[in-house]
Length: 146
Image (cartoon, rainbow, N blue to C red; front, side, top):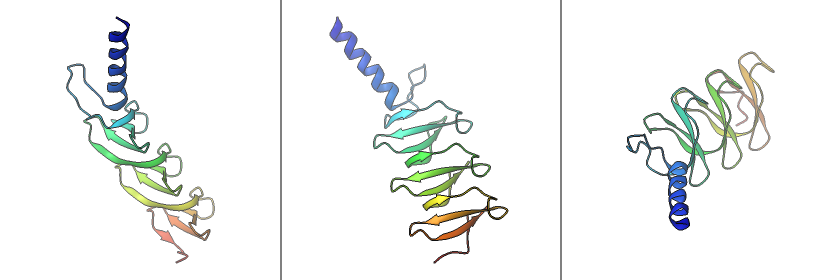
């Protein structure tokens, strides 16, 4: 009896960790994630997911991947700019995604300061080589160091 209960518990745990199943037992997300967070924490109808490789992204409530799991960290939307979330790449560089799932600023900065700290609607950024420039409220680089 203990073996059956343990096997059942492992199966249930595996289903919970790797996919979402409706009460009618219809699979809406194929098992490919280590974790699926609650829907609505970051964006309405979105859930933060962690891939088997440990990367973060988002799915919608239909199981569609909105943001490919490729980041090691995703901050809450709105901390830097309304409707944007700060993301961190595997290499540790910073960028932004928007609330449609688009990568607005490619992760290529060591540091991103708050918008408006130095110039209205601009954020000071530090690139991979330690050089300074700014990005504007549309994600365009201003005063590029290159």
